[in-house]
Image 1 (cartoon, rainbow, N blue to C red):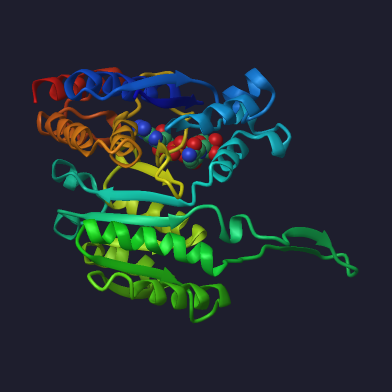
Image 2 (spheres, rainbow, N blue to C red):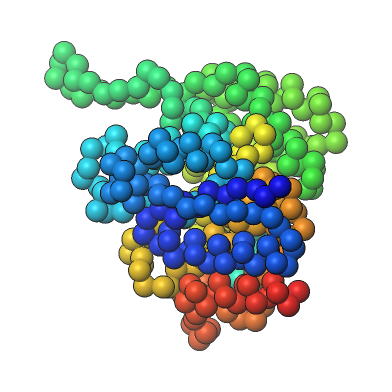
Length: 360
Ligand code: NAD
């Protein structure tokens, strides 16, 4: 039966990079017989302009009915001054929480061809292949009470709450263990258990779940040390599992080890492996409309979609191999080019991946 994919280009460079990922998905229909139907709708600023809301009810219904969602990026300066409740990013947070996408997978994989684009020495990062599993629907970004007020003494005061239930921790820990099991068998849980009560529960629950995975070597690290180790010796990590805020920060840090945020895909999964797939970067308004954005993070997100939500690891492997071939051939978008390297545009890069896929 045909699988339905809802495509949400979003704002800024979103439509440009999504067009290339769509070309690649259409190509695997032919090369791998992947039976997919693509539908398109708006999210973020584009949805605000069209529907008056960054996530229209009808779009959410389409997302619920789809087998997977492929997203470009949302946001841009033209929506910075609108009602905060209607800002593009609200649409993104809402679709993630409404679809129950609690597990965010962010691989930080350094293509050997790009080792010299990393800000770290090539010998520190060559062969880097980390997967960060971030809890996405709980913790301090969603906790209540939260607020700000002016106290009796006239001073402003603001507060947030960092809550986690044992069930929320257990389900993300299981995702981390399952991923480690099919990779190199090492899971590092990152917390701040020396200070935070929520982290003490986090560590206890991870240790309880570990008894179901005797084949996975589990370790624990405080988040401050993890931030340091990620730049000191990043190859010590295989899978990292962590909470929403720590994962937000560490995954951006890990992304820079690979040279460009334009290379990094992500997946956000629910309990049944239905997911939303998107590049880690934003809508890059500074380069939107110029045809120079790197589409590879979005193309690699489409590969993750095929692997995790459609069970087509074969087609995903082929797309990842095609990206490797294109890099081998020396094609670079501006963000990953070194001085003297030939620079190609967004569409040229997408077309090259499609060609590499077809000759495989
Ligand atoms: P950004 O990731 O959009 O851009 C940061 C820098 O990286 C920019 O210089 C940009 O040109 C460059 N860049 C990003 N993607 C690139 C690509 N594919 N190819 C080449 N260069 C690329 O982050 P920002 O500038 O902080 O945010 C811009 C907008 O995006 C804001 O409105 C922000 O809220 C939004 N945003 C959205 C998401 C999302 O949709 N998931 C994530 C982060 C930021």
